Length: 163
Image (cartoon, rainbow, N blue to C red; front, side):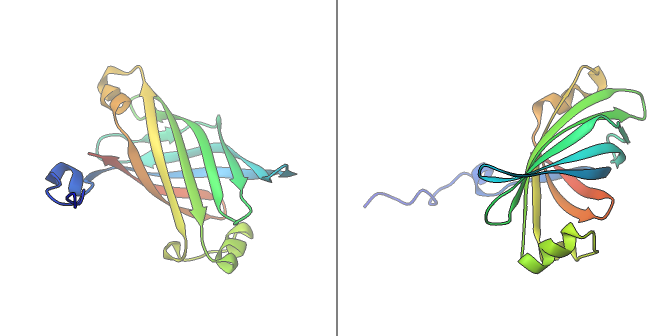
């Protein structure tokens, strides 16, 4: 019998390491397109926000959007495009895909804008960045993962650079 793939796995493949990147809060308003063939489409208009971390901080410009798909299993997938502007005026494009799901009663409370415990549902994202700013060129070559929480006026995320 061949050896298991898990045997003798190099340390670099045995676990994921992360480093805090920033915390981001978005201000958004949901626009519901409605039931389309296969799912319900919603679009979140992002009209600003802030992000703060040890290596970069600044504001989220009001040009972003969040195309959401509400699937038949009630999970919500996200496809987001944002523009970040650092405190030093550097412009950074940010894209992320994500998924949010949980118990039906928790999701219904979220949809009504009620406060819920972020540990009561699953909300994760995977982010990429692009910038022409030499100071932040390192962002062009990393993947960040995030944990999200939805409040009545928009989401808040803790993002981590995946090392």
